[in-house]
Length: 102
Ligand SMILES: [Zn+2]
Image 1: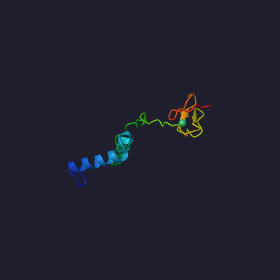
Image 2 (image 1 turned 180 degrees about the vertical axis):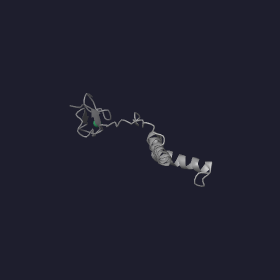
Image 3 (image 1 turned 135 degrees about the vertical axis):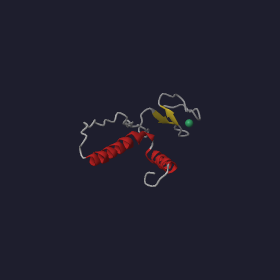
Image 4 (image 1 turned 90 degrees about the vertical axis):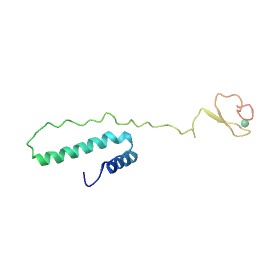
């Protein structure tokens, strides 16, 4: 047993890690764990085995998508003068009350 834990406990810990960090970060956690294990092993072996370190490149970095959702000053909307409903700028009439938009 590792640290007195059984397989079910290890599975629960794994699931908790998954829930906390999300599946997207698993490669990062995996590489971090891999590095730790490697360092420990290298420390134990005291450089008897000198394998060249392969660079860890993360190709799975999630690209941050900046969503532009400020329609406060969006020019393609206009408000109905009668009921205040927001209509698209190319709409001729209010979608709610039918008032002609100018
Ligand atoms: Zn209206």
